[in-house]
Image 1 (tube, rainbow, N blue to C red):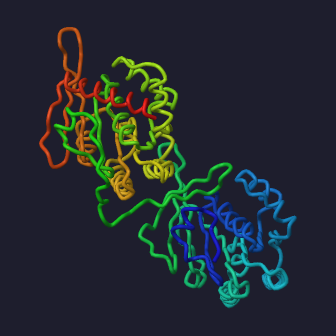
Image 2: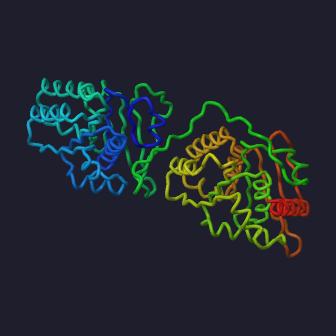
Image 3: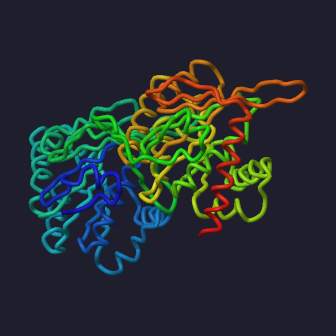
Length: 458
């Protein structure tokens, strides 16, 4: 078996690249076709499968230098005889090109052959139907001649999505269409899996990126047919909260909300208490602040209830991994899948901070669908999910509440010249309740004492 060299594709299309298989990689100019084809060539060469890269337009030095920026050293593998690059001038006759390819394949023992692009050859015989049919039949037989995988790169004219490769489309084992367009001034990329034999496909179009030092990254959205099961029970950690919600579980979604102009820091001891007292390794993704600012806010929240020193630093070090993300640098699906790429097996919980920013960058229908599938996937992994955000409008609040298993809403209350918070709490299967500020602070003090004891014991 051979690989694409792209984790998402290798997992999703794991039965496609096999001996005597043909894959068409098509797309508009600049969509990433050559980068993907080069990745397939290079990744298999690293595994000991010799690769022949045939080009009709791409200059060798230009291609090799471009691939270096994606951490692929074609120069090195070429010097080792694992990769061979051949460029045919466009004025060569088709018969001569085919004859030379046959000679190279038979003499070189190549298991991966890339033809970039097949359009150049087909264009030579566009006015000769019989010759065109002969050439198409040749490509049909090339994978068998190689006894490996043949990758045909195909150009799509701007504005068109029909390949027009004739019989090649029917005999290929997979057709991957790379697309790109500008949405809200951001370049977004999609990979359409138009055809894939031997692979159960339930998602036909997926987002992908091309990053410096890593190359092509494909994100397969989690699309599960069943709703995620409930995970193990967790300690509610303080009596006032336990009296209201009884118990919580991994696999639940908690939504903590507050006004945009009165963002409390009092929820931090509650949240960190749930994480630390249940010994949960937690990923925190903030759309508002960098990690150092998040750390500062956590420290400040504990100072507000009389806790200082190394105590908070130890809790952060033991239980939290802090990350930040600019939601306006991605499309809707891209950011959801970027988030999932951060989640590791060792994470027991995931906290998303500033979710109101994410919800404002896209259409409501697409946001809801993408978010639901993401949350359902995390439920299946038994991750506790906590989503924090300002209430920017009633519709958004209702949407986030509808997706949650538990809602905690901080409502500012004025008493004289001071503002404190009453805390609205609802958990699925129970009636909503109000925790008065005094009760909530009682909860925070109980949590703090338990956390101090935990630090001493450890």
